[in-house]
Length: 384
Image (cartoon, rainbow, N blue to C red; front, side, top):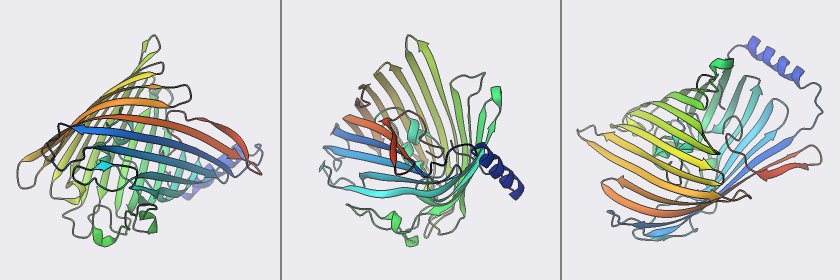
Protein backbone atom coordinates (compact mmCIF):
# COMPACT_ATOMS: atom_id res chain seq x y z
CA UNK A 1 0.00 0.00 0.00
CA UNK A 2 1.34 3.43 -0.89
CA UNK A 3 2.01 5.88 1.90
CA UNK A 4 2.95 9.48 2.65
CA UNK A 5 6.09 10.59 4.53
CA UNK A 6 5.40 12.67 7.61
CA UNK A 7 7.43 15.90 7.46
CA UNK A 8 9.96 17.10 9.98
CA UNK A 9 13.37 15.92 11.12
CA UNK A 10 12.24 15.06 14.69
CA UNK A 11 9.50 12.74 13.45
CA UNK A 12 11.90 11.11 10.99
CA UNK A 13 14.56 10.59 13.69
CA UNK A 14 12.08 9.06 16.16
CA UNK A 15 10.71 6.75 13.47
CA UNK A 16 14.24 5.57 12.59
CA UNK A 17 15.11 4.87 16.24
CA UNK A 18 11.82 3.04 16.83
CA UNK A 19 12.27 0.90 13.74
CA UNK A 20 15.88 0.03 14.57
CA UNK A 21 14.87 -0.96 18.12
CA UNK A 22 12.13 -3.27 16.80
CA UNK A 23 14.64 -5.15 14.65
CA UNK A 24 17.52 -5.06 17.12
CA UNK A 25 17.09 -8.69 18.16
CA UNK A 26 16.72 -10.08 14.63
CA UNK A 27 19.71 -11.84 13.03
CA UNK A 28 21.59 -9.95 10.34
CA UNK A 29 20.48 -11.63 7.11
CA UNK A 30 20.74 -8.88 4.54
CA UNK A 31 20.62 -8.44 1.63
CA UNK A 32 17.36 -10.26 0.84
CA UNK A 33 15.99 -10.48 -2.69
CA UNK A 34 12.25 -10.93 -3.29
CA UNK A 35 10.57 -11.16 -6.65
CA UNK A 36 7.36 -11.83 -8.51
CA UNK A 37 7.23 -13.05 -12.11
CA UNK A 38 3.94 -12.57 -13.98
CA UNK A 39 3.55 -14.24 -17.39
CA UNK A 40 0.65 -13.77 -19.82
CA UNK A 41 0.09 -14.79 -23.42
CA UNK A 42 -2.96 -13.94 -25.52
CA UNK A 43 -4.45 -15.04 -28.80
CA UNK A 44 -7.26 -12.96 -30.28
CA UNK A 45 -9.48 -12.96 -33.35
CA UNK A 46 -11.16 -9.70 -34.42
CA UNK A 47 -14.48 -9.92 -36.26
CA UNK A 48 -17.37 -7.67 -37.26
CA UNK A 49 -15.01 -4.70 -37.21
CA UNK A 50 -15.99 -1.25 -38.48
CA UNK A 51 -12.30 -0.39 -38.83
CA UNK A 52 -11.20 -1.60 -42.27
CA UNK A 53 -7.56 -0.95 -41.35
CA UNK A 54 -7.77 -2.78 -38.05
CA UNK A 55 -5.99 -6.02 -37.16
CA UNK A 56 -7.49 -9.36 -38.19
CA UNK A 57 -6.06 -11.53 -35.45
CA UNK A 58 -2.83 -12.23 -33.68
CA UNK A 59 -0.75 -13.33 -30.74
CA UNK A 60 0.53 -11.21 -27.91
CA UNK A 61 2.48 -11.69 -24.71
CA UNK A 62 3.36 -9.71 -21.62
CA UNK A 63 5.76 -10.50 -18.80
CA UNK A 64 6.53 -8.52 -15.68
CA UNK A 65 9.35 -9.14 -13.22
CA UNK A 66 9.08 -7.21 -9.96
CA UNK A 67 12.20 -7.17 -7.79
CA UNK A 68 12.84 -5.92 -4.27
CA UNK A 69 16.36 -5.98 -2.84
CA UNK A 70 16.22 -5.29 0.91
CA UNK A 71 19.52 -3.79 2.06
CA UNK A 72 18.43 -3.37 5.69
CA UNK A 73 15.20 -3.33 7.72
CA UNK A 74 14.65 0.22 6.37
CA UNK A 75 16.17 0.60 2.91
CA UNK A 76 15.34 -1.37 -0.24
CA UNK A 77 15.85 -1.07 -4.00
CA UNK A 78 12.88 -1.81 -6.28
CA UNK A 79 12.65 -2.44 -10.00
CA UNK A 80 9.95 -3.61 -12.40
CA UNK A 81 11.03 -5.03 -15.77
CA UNK A 82 8.33 -5.27 -18.45
CA UNK A 83 8.27 -7.24 -21.70
CA UNK A 84 5.38 -6.32 -24.01
CA UNK A 85 4.50 -5.28 -27.60
CA UNK A 86 5.34 -1.65 -28.37
CA UNK A 87 4.26 -1.24 -32.00
CA UNK A 88 0.83 -0.76 -33.58
CA UNK A 89 -0.47 -3.41 -35.95
CA UNK A 90 -0.45 -2.55 -39.64
CA UNK A 91 -3.71 -2.67 -41.66
CA UNK A 92 -5.20 -6.15 -41.63
CA UNK A 93 -2.06 -7.76 -40.26
CA UNK A 94 -1.44 -10.82 -38.11
CA UNK A 95 0.46 -9.94 -34.95
CA UNK A 96 3.13 -12.35 -33.76
CA UNK A 97 5.78 -12.14 -31.06
CA UNK A 98 8.19 -10.13 -33.21
CA UNK A 99 7.61 -6.67 -31.69
CA UNK A 100 8.22 -7.41 -28.00
CA UNK A 101 10.32 -4.88 -26.10
CA UNK A 102 12.01 -5.16 -22.70
CA UNK A 103 12.29 -2.02 -20.58
CA UNK A 104 12.66 -0.89 -16.97
CA UNK A 105 9.31 0.54 -15.90
CA UNK A 106 10.59 1.42 -12.41
CA UNK A 107 13.91 1.71 -10.57
CA UNK A 108 13.90 3.43 -7.19
CA UNK A 109 15.22 3.49 -3.63
CA UNK A 110 12.64 3.11 -0.86
CA UNK A 111 12.75 3.71 2.89
CA UNK A 112 10.13 2.18 5.22
CA UNK A 113 9.82 3.73 8.67
CA UNK A 114 6.85 2.05 10.26
CA UNK A 115 3.75 3.95 9.21
CA UNK A 116 5.85 6.40 7.18
CA UNK A 117 8.09 6.04 4.16
CA UNK A 118 9.42 7.58 0.99
CA UNK A 119 11.03 6.70 -2.32
CA UNK A 120 13.14 8.39 -4.96
CA UNK A 121 13.81 7.34 -8.56
CA UNK A 122 11.83 6.16 -11.56
CA UNK A 123 8.41 4.87 -10.52
CA UNK A 124 4.64 4.84 -11.20
CA UNK A 125 2.92 7.62 -9.21
CA UNK A 126 -0.40 6.82 -7.55
CA UNK A 127 -3.65 7.75 -9.30
CA UNK A 128 -6.60 5.38 -9.75
CA UNK A 129 -6.85 1.60 -9.59
CA UNK A 130 -9.14 0.45 -12.43
CA UNK A 131 -6.17 0.16 -14.80
CA UNK A 132 -5.04 -2.69 -12.54
CA UNK A 133 -8.05 -4.19 -10.76
CA UNK A 134 -10.87 -4.12 -13.34
CA UNK A 135 -11.71 -7.84 -13.66
CA UNK A 136 -11.37 -9.78 -16.90
CA UNK A 137 -9.11 -10.29 -19.90
CA UNK A 138 -9.70 -6.96 -21.70
CA UNK A 139 -11.22 -4.88 -18.88
CA UNK A 140 -8.24 -2.63 -18.11
CA UNK A 141 -7.47 -1.48 -21.67
CA UNK A 142 -9.27 1.89 -21.66
CA UNK A 143 -8.45 2.71 -18.03
CA UNK A 144 -4.75 2.23 -18.78
CA UNK A 145 -4.92 5.46 -20.78
CA UNK A 146 -4.88 7.55 -17.57
CA UNK A 147 -2.41 5.43 -15.60
CA UNK A 148 0.70 7.34 -14.47
CA UNK A 149 3.83 5.39 -15.40
CA UNK A 150 7.57 5.82 -15.89
CA UNK A 151 8.10 9.07 -14.01
CA UNK A 152 11.20 10.34 -12.20
CA UNK A 153 10.49 11.89 -8.86
CA UNK A 154 9.78 11.55 -5.17
CA UNK A 155 6.93 9.99 -3.21
CA UNK A 156 6.03 9.88 0.45
CA UNK A 157 3.24 8.19 2.39
CA UNK A 158 1.72 8.04 5.84
CA UNK A 159 -0.58 5.27 7.08
CA UNK A 160 -3.17 5.93 9.76
CA UNK A 161 -4.41 2.79 11.52
CA UNK A 162 -7.76 3.71 13.00
CA UNK A 163 -8.74 0.35 14.45
CA UNK A 164 -12.41 -0.37 13.82
CA UNK A 165 -12.70 2.82 11.78
CA UNK A 166 -10.27 1.45 9.20
CA UNK A 167 -6.80 2.03 7.80
CA UNK A 168 -6.12 5.11 5.67
CA UNK A 169 -3.08 5.90 3.55
CA UNK A 170 -2.22 9.39 2.31
CA UNK A 171 0.30 9.52 -0.54
CA UNK A 172 2.02 12.45 -2.20
CA UNK A 173 4.02 12.38 -5.47
CA UNK A 174 6.08 14.97 -7.38
CA UNK A 175 7.51 13.89 -10.73
CA UNK A 176 8.30 14.40 -14.42
CA UNK A 177 8.38 12.04 -17.41
CA UNK A 178 11.43 9.84 -18.00
CA UNK A 179 13.69 11.12 -20.79
CA UNK A 180 16.81 9.13 -19.84
CA UNK A 181 18.19 6.05 -21.61
CA UNK A 182 15.75 4.02 -19.48
CA UNK A 183 12.92 5.28 -21.71
CA UNK A 184 14.38 3.13 -24.51
CA UNK A 185 13.97 -0.64 -24.76
CA UNK A 186 15.77 -3.81 -25.82
CA UNK A 187 14.86 -6.26 -28.62
CA UNK A 188 12.42 -3.79 -30.22
CA UNK A 189 13.56 -0.24 -29.57
CA UNK A 190 10.60 2.01 -28.82
CA UNK A 191 12.84 5.11 -29.05
CA UNK A 192 14.04 7.54 -26.44
CA UNK A 193 11.63 10.14 -25.10
CA UNK A 194 12.83 13.76 -25.37
CA UNK A 195 11.54 17.10 -24.09
CA UNK A 196 10.78 18.06 -27.70
CA UNK A 197 8.15 15.29 -27.83
CA UNK A 198 5.95 17.26 -25.45
CA UNK A 199 3.17 15.56 -23.55
CA UNK A 200 1.84 15.98 -20.00
CA UNK A 201 4.54 15.96 -17.27
CA UNK A 202 7.32 15.89 -19.89
CA UNK A 203 9.03 19.03 -18.57
CA UNK A 204 12.29 17.85 -16.99
CA UNK A 205 11.21 19.57 -13.75
CA UNK A 206 9.36 18.44 -10.63
CA UNK A 207 6.28 20.52 -11.45
CA UNK A 208 3.73 17.69 -11.80
CA UNK A 209 2.18 16.04 -8.77
CA UNK A 210 -0.58 13.80 -7.44
CA UNK A 211 -2.17 13.29 -4.03
CA UNK A 212 -4.20 10.17 -3.21
CA UNK A 213 -6.09 8.74 -0.25
CA UNK A 214 -6.84 5.01 0.14
CA UNK A 215 -9.03 3.42 2.80
CA UNK A 216 -9.74 -0.18 3.83
CA UNK A 217 -10.43 -2.54 6.76
CA UNK A 218 -13.47 -0.60 7.99
CA UNK A 219 -15.29 -2.79 10.53
CA UNK A 220 -18.73 -1.42 9.69
CA UNK A 221 -18.14 -2.17 5.98
CA UNK A 222 -16.43 -5.56 5.74
CA UNK A 223 -14.79 -6.17 2.37
CA UNK A 224 -15.02 -2.49 1.39
CA UNK A 225 -12.17 -0.23 0.24
CA UNK A 226 -11.94 3.07 -1.62
CA UNK A 227 -9.51 5.36 -3.40
CA UNK A 228 -9.57 9.12 -4.04
CA UNK A 229 -7.06 11.25 -5.88
CA UNK A 230 -6.09 14.50 -7.58
CA UNK A 231 -3.35 15.10 -10.13
CA UNK A 232 -1.77 18.07 -11.89
CA UNK A 233 0.31 17.36 -14.99
CA UNK A 234 2.29 20.31 -16.33
CA UNK A 235 2.11 20.90 -20.08
CA UNK A 236 5.13 19.93 -22.15
CA UNK A 237 6.55 21.50 -25.31
CA UNK A 238 3.77 22.41 -27.75
CA UNK A 239 0.96 21.28 -25.42
CA UNK A 240 -2.26 23.26 -25.04
CA UNK A 241 -2.54 23.51 -21.24
CA UNK A 242 -1.81 21.82 -17.93
CA UNK A 243 -4.02 18.85 -17.09
CA UNK A 244 -5.93 18.56 -13.81
CA UNK A 245 -7.69 15.34 -12.90
CA UNK A 246 -9.80 13.74 -10.17
CA UNK A 247 -10.48 10.07 -9.41
CA UNK A 248 -12.90 8.27 -7.08
CA UNK A 249 -13.12 4.51 -6.85
CA UNK A 250 -14.51 1.76 -4.66
CA UNK A 251 -14.15 -1.97 -4.27
CA UNK A 252 -16.48 -4.37 -2.42
CA UNK A 253 -16.05 -8.09 -1.78
CA UNK A 254 -18.86 -10.37 -0.55
CA UNK A 255 -18.83 -13.94 0.69
CA UNK A 256 -22.12 -15.23 -0.69
CA UNK A 257 -21.76 -18.71 0.81
CA UNK A 258 -20.83 -22.22 -0.34
CA UNK A 259 -17.31 -21.12 -1.16
CA UNK A 260 -18.48 -18.41 -3.57
CA UNK A 261 -17.05 -14.87 -3.57
CA UNK A 262 -18.46 -11.85 -5.38
CA UNK A 263 -16.27 -8.77 -5.99
CA UNK A 264 -17.43 -5.39 -7.33
CA UNK A 265 -15.24 -2.61 -8.74
CA UNK A 266 -16.17 0.93 -9.75
CA UNK A 267 -14.11 4.01 -10.66
CA UNK A 268 -14.79 7.47 -12.11
CA UNK A 269 -12.12 9.81 -13.51
CA UNK A 270 -12.47 13.39 -14.74
CA UNK A 271 -9.62 15.06 -16.66
CA UNK A 272 -9.66 18.78 -17.47
CA UNK A 273 -7.53 19.48 -20.58
CA UNK A 274 -7.08 15.72 -20.83
CA UNK A 275 -3.50 14.75 -21.69
CA UNK A 276 -2.65 18.47 -22.12
CA UNK A 277 -5.13 18.91 -25.02
CA UNK A 278 -7.99 21.45 -25.30
CA UNK A 279 -10.55 18.70 -24.57
CA UNK A 280 -11.97 17.37 -21.30
CA UNK A 281 -12.58 13.67 -20.70
CA UNK A 282 -14.27 11.26 -18.30
CA UNK A 283 -13.75 7.54 -17.74
CA UNK A 284 -16.32 5.40 -15.94
CA UNK A 285 -15.39 1.80 -15.16
CA UNK A 286 -17.53 -0.90 -13.52
CA UNK A 287 -16.96 -4.60 -13.12
CA UNK A 288 -17.87 -7.70 -11.16
CA UNK A 289 -16.16 -11.01 -10.62
CA UNK A 290 -17.63 -14.27 -9.33
CA UNK A 291 -15.26 -16.92 -7.94
CA UNK A 292 -16.04 -20.44 -6.77
CA UNK A 293 -13.15 -22.79 -6.19
CA UNK A 294 -10.91 -22.78 -9.28
CA UNK A 295 -13.64 -21.31 -11.51
CA UNK A 296 -14.14 -17.59 -12.11
CA UNK A 297 -16.24 -15.30 -14.31
CA UNK A 298 -16.10 -11.56 -15.02
CA UNK A 299 -18.26 -8.83 -16.52
CA UNK A 300 -16.72 -5.38 -16.92
CA UNK A 301 -16.74 -2.26 -19.06
CA UNK A 302 -15.43 1.30 -19.40
CA UNK A 303 -17.16 4.33 -20.93
CA UNK A 304 -14.86 7.09 -22.23
CA UNK A 305 -16.45 10.43 -23.04
CA UNK A 306 -14.48 13.31 -24.60
CA UNK A 307 -15.94 16.81 -24.50
CA UNK A 308 -14.46 18.48 -27.58
CA UNK A 309 -13.31 22.08 -27.19
CA UNK A 310 -14.96 23.02 -30.50
CA UNK A 311 -18.32 21.67 -29.34
CA UNK A 312 -19.89 18.25 -29.27
CA UNK A 313 -18.51 15.07 -27.77
CA UNK A 314 -17.12 11.67 -28.67
CA UNK A 315 -18.08 8.46 -26.88
CA UNK A 316 -15.90 5.34 -26.85
CA UNK A 317 -16.45 2.20 -24.82
CA UNK A 318 -15.05 -1.22 -24.09
CA UNK A 319 -17.10 -4.08 -22.61
CA UNK A 320 -16.15 -7.68 -22.02
CA UNK A 321 -17.39 -10.94 -20.53
CA UNK A 322 -14.93 -13.64 -19.57
CA UNK A 323 -14.51 -16.81 -17.58
CA UNK A 324 -11.77 -19.22 -16.71
CA UNK A 325 -10.25 -21.97 -14.60
CA UNK A 326 -7.14 -21.85 -12.38
CA UNK A 327 -5.24 -25.12 -12.08
CA UNK A 328 -3.53 -26.27 -8.91
CA UNK A 329 -0.12 -25.20 -10.23
CA UNK A 330 -1.32 -21.60 -10.61
CA UNK A 331 -1.84 -21.68 -14.39
CA UNK A 332 -5.02 -19.82 -15.37
CA UNK A 333 -6.87 -20.27 -18.66
CA UNK A 334 -9.49 -17.62 -19.55
CA UNK A 335 -11.80 -17.13 -22.51
CA UNK A 336 -13.23 -13.66 -23.25
CA UNK A 337 -15.57 -11.90 -25.65
CA UNK A 338 -15.13 -8.16 -26.03
CA UNK A 339 -16.92 -5.33 -27.82
CA UNK A 340 -15.74 -1.76 -28.20
CA UNK A 341 -15.96 1.52 -30.07
CA UNK A 342 -12.93 3.65 -30.90
CA UNK A 343 -13.11 6.81 -33.04
CA UNK A 344 -16.56 5.79 -34.24
CA UNK A 345 -15.55 2.29 -35.35
CA UNK A 346 -17.16 -0.72 -33.62
CA UNK A 347 -15.09 -3.87 -33.12
CA UNK A 348 -15.70 -7.30 -31.60
CA UNK A 349 -13.00 -9.70 -30.49
CA UNK A 350 -12.78 -13.17 -28.98
CA UNK A 351 -9.62 -14.12 -27.13
CA UNK A 352 -7.90 -16.69 -24.95
CA UNK A 353 -5.40 -15.80 -22.21
CA UNK A 354 -2.94 -18.05 -20.39
CA UNK A 355 -1.38 -16.57 -17.25
CA UNK A 356 0.79 -17.68 -14.37
CA UNK A 357 2.58 -15.92 -11.50
CA UNK A 358 5.45 -17.16 -9.34
CA UNK A 359 6.97 -15.50 -6.26
CA UNK A 360 10.46 -16.18 -4.98
CA UNK A 361 12.73 -15.10 -2.15
CA UNK A 362 16.46 -15.46 -1.58
CA UNK A 363 18.24 -14.25 1.52
CA UNK A 364 21.31 -14.52 3.70
CA UNK A 365 24.74 -15.52 2.56
CA UNK A 366 25.68 -17.06 0.22
CA UNK A 367 22.18 -16.71 -1.24
CA UNK A 368 20.17 -19.62 0.13
CA UNK A 369 16.75 -20.13 -1.50
CA UNK A 370 14.20 -19.43 1.23
CA UNK A 371 10.91 -19.71 -0.69
CA UNK A 372 9.60 -20.39 -4.17
CA UNK A 373 5.98 -20.93 -5.09
CA UNK A 374 2.78 -19.63 -6.69
CA UNK A 375 2.21 -15.90 -6.31
CA UNK A 376 -0.31 -14.77 -3.74
CA UNK A 377 -3.08 -12.33 -4.62
CA UNK A 378 -2.88 -8.66 -3.68
CA UNK A 379 -0.09 -6.09 -3.61
CA UNK A 380 3.40 -7.49 -4.09
CA UNK A 381 4.85 -4.82 -1.74
CA UNK A 382 3.90 -1.33 -0.63
CA UNK A 383 4.07 0.40 -4.01
CA UNK A 384 2.80 -2.37 -6.29
